[in-house]
Image (cartoon, rainbow, N blue to C red; front, top):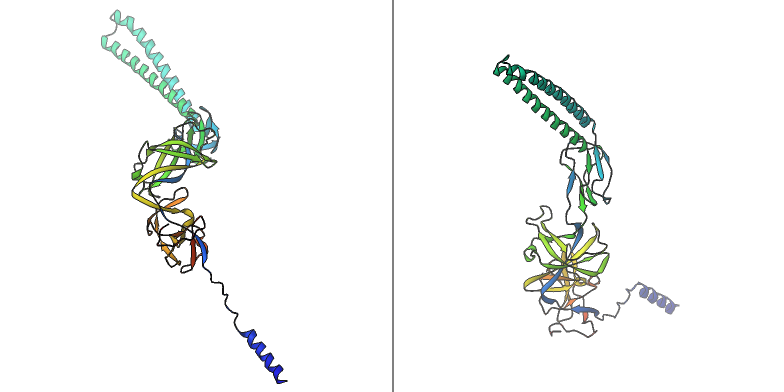
Length: 363
């Protein structure tokens, strides 16, 4: 009976003992690469297709908007009504001006008839020269008042016409900055019109890179709808001052040829080649990770162990990232899969041909 009890006790002790640790401690294989050095870098900036000319449209008179006839994205033709103001006051002003015109015309006619009666009297010396001069002066004054009244009528009629905002040329409504029922002042922007004709791409460049960009510098443009096509273009304009909020400079990129199907508002990418003194190391975009918004890469030591290296980077390129500090040209870094790794982890570094790499011995 005692052997049975002892056997049961050993079984209970074995069940309570911790599980043995796995014996598989083989280093994890990782794909590695070395930073590439290049003086000529192609930086990629996202932008938006815009019209070369985008006039702001507003009423020439103040008033309350009673109707908006178009909205953003609508195509319009020259002379097409876009918005209307309440014209009650303008109609009253026009009627008042027309009434003053009628009164001025009656005064002019009376003054002229009086002058015609005084002319023969002056010839017969029935009246003095001073009396005739006074009548003639009143006639000229009545004529001037009439001309002023006629001008006032034309202005009043124009004011009534200005209550309707019209497109001055063909284009597309790019922005709307007012609503129905809103009271606007003369000249206040209601719509922004993207005119027909030339198209350009507008991008924003950080202030530490704008010094390397020159007007007329050749670039390439691709549309997000056609990423495989590249269109020649050039830098048409560099903003003289930075945007107060983003601290970036606006660049206007003019296309060198007509691009079929390009529309205002489309997303585009601009490939801008810049020359950097002394060359700049770049690493694959897939090699970059981040911790608390600080970019880092995994470097493989000569002992085949991972270490986390924080780096300073420049503007992202198409598929690579410039590294401004933190790496040496002969370092080996993990090219992809950094989110699965930890510092101090043992690895086996291999290149793209699955050959084992020994850091510290070159490529």
